Image (cartoon, rainbow, N blue to C red; front, side, top):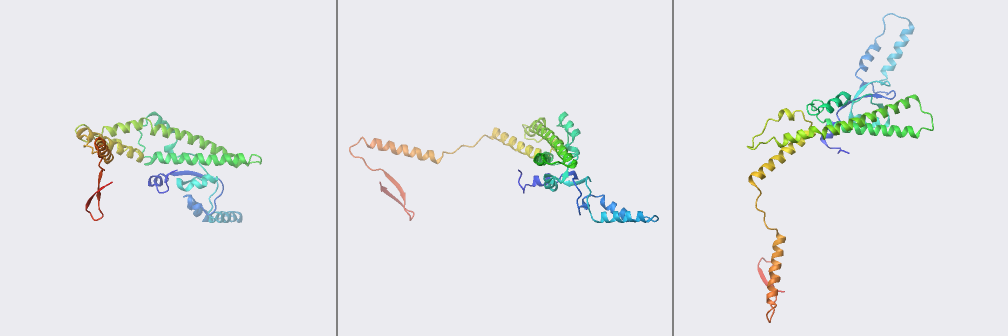
Length: 291
């Protein structure tokens, strides 16, 4: 799961989705931009007519003044706002956004390199994977509820909702395969080619604006990392690496071997002198003590 404080995730969840309520929502008519026009039209009374028309207009006015959102009304809401409603089965997804639909998938399968994904969504791949995850979770919850209530009779609305969620799950799996093949296929190879060839042998940068302008934020980050790695390799080939210093562990091992050799040569004589070690006193002076 992405981090709650991740800026890219927050921006990716701003994608607007078309949803339909599964039942009438009270006091949520403001979510429908056409509700204000309906209310103004219902408030207008006809100039001429009988009492029945007046009664009907009064009923319509009362219903609209309640601020209810009828079942099946198409409304647009961001991805972060519909997650809980989708898991509870309060809403349905009639269709995916246009840039995640069937025609867009056909274009990506035909030529993924030439498609300008940034103009569709700057966080195209993150938003798509979040949408896939939401649809699969919502379909799993709907199927689990339907299997648990098999013993009891289900209404026609519940059966329609279950069928709709199964279709949404199939669309989500197809979208997932399309996103993975697009992100990890020829588009990724072309991105790496531009990153490695952005610096020529003379160190002059090529014009990569035409390529970078079509990349999403994820692909741009990968491109920047590739350019940095390409520049580091070029500097290493030109200047080489600096001389490495000797490790302190190796120096200690050499000192111990020298001391051990001195003790072995001193053992051949008649008297073996104890080895001396340099000790630093607490006052800062040096003292030689025999151990």
